[in-house]
Length: 155
Image (cartoon, rainbow, N blue to C red; front, side, top):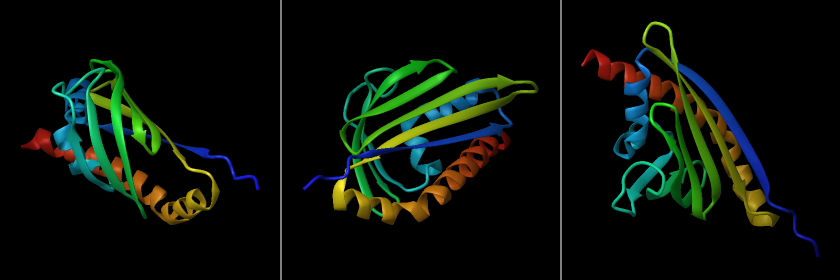
């Protein structure tokens, strides 16, 4: 009997935030703020002394219809330009956040997220449970990130 192969899903989203790129980058780069804006993130804990930049690692649990557990490592980091996180354990995923300065102290954030669920019946069940949440998660995460960063400017 042949099992269905694992299939990667890619999600992309862009937002513009009324704040300078250095402020937006610093906010997204601070793991302690992530639960404030990322939909479904139930837990994120550092597992290395290094908290930022290439090599920093975190254990996380996301609840998007099902609980997904991963250990992620920062695999790309350029100040005010790029944060890339790739799983090293658990559900395979990569998150790439790029930051572009726009006119008038505005920032464009482009998110590229790839995740791979296991093949076979277990993966199919997970995919079915997650499907209704993916669109909601993306919209909520984007809107909340904009609101959180912009509200910090008014504080």
